[in-house]
Amino acid sequence: MIYPTIIKIQPLENYRIKINYNTGEEKIFNVLPYIKGQWYEELFEEKYFKTVHIIENGKGIEWENGQDIAPHELYDMSINI
Image 1 (cartoon, rainbow, N blue to C red):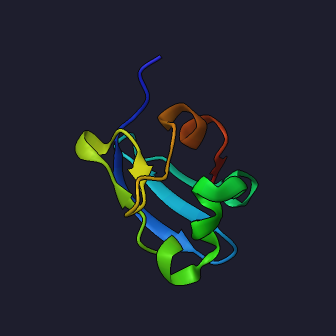
Image 2: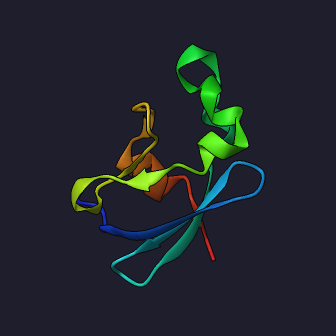
């Protein structure tokens, strides 16, 4: 399945991210269940968590040190708002 393109993101409190898609959809994704193990533990730092950005062509998100979440998880596991 081809997923919509991410056009805007906003880090929120409690390790959540608001995601706007090119379809007009707005969703909230909870990152907290993904923050486990050494690779993701850095996301617990609020300042670092807020460095999240959209990757090339709006296909996903990532943080400065390469942590990312698959586009299908972002879309399928988010709550519509």
